[in-house]
Image 1 (tube, rainbow, N blue to C red):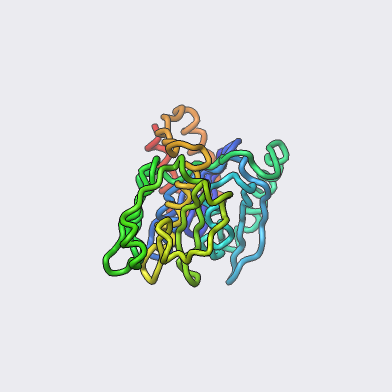
Image 2: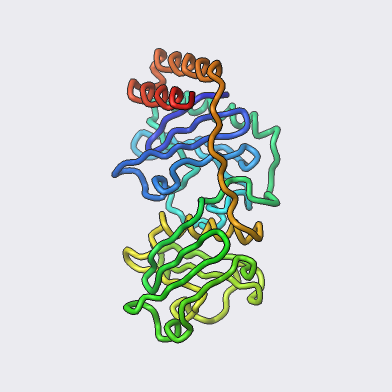
Length: 287
């Protein structure tokens, strides 16, 4: 397709086999989007496309990922607020016709791709190293092991007695993330001897050396969720998180064609002056 669709907080670029989502930076943009930067979503990772009416004269175009295709959404386990859904693009209602066109185009392409649960992650995990500060300690992940260093002001005596912790990816079976926006938010590492991912023992997170506890200002979503997703992806692959390759230079003829198409959208009033200038600059930078 090679087209672009700009909405609030993000720009979607449509390719024949994927959607490249570039998230904006700004005071109104959700911090999770800013932390993600951009994500390429293969169409093979998408199960459904929907277009619905939004609030205050908007429409929302949304992709629904296949179960097991994206470590970020698997770690989130349905806990993200609607406004922080990285698969949702909100547009002014006057662009509903254009959004409907892209939704129909995507649905046609999805008919050629897989459906149902994915047997492996199809969307790249957040890149390591990653770290964040929890209420009772600092968590860090280098792609092969997770480190917990306890805080003397927040950690329980149980954690202090256990000492700082290090967990090799090979010794883990999963990750449990509970949003810091919910009561008793935490990140817990599930070790192999505990059984399958998602099962936990009776030990509360503040007493479990394999968990860090969130609090007001500690372990925010935009830091702790990408962290959990990266660990989960490494556990699934039983190795370091794959390094995302640097983008290759595009064919100048392809860039020229895309700029021409962008100009047509601009002249038709489907792309604003600001969007046209910004996207044209991005395309020229790829030469």
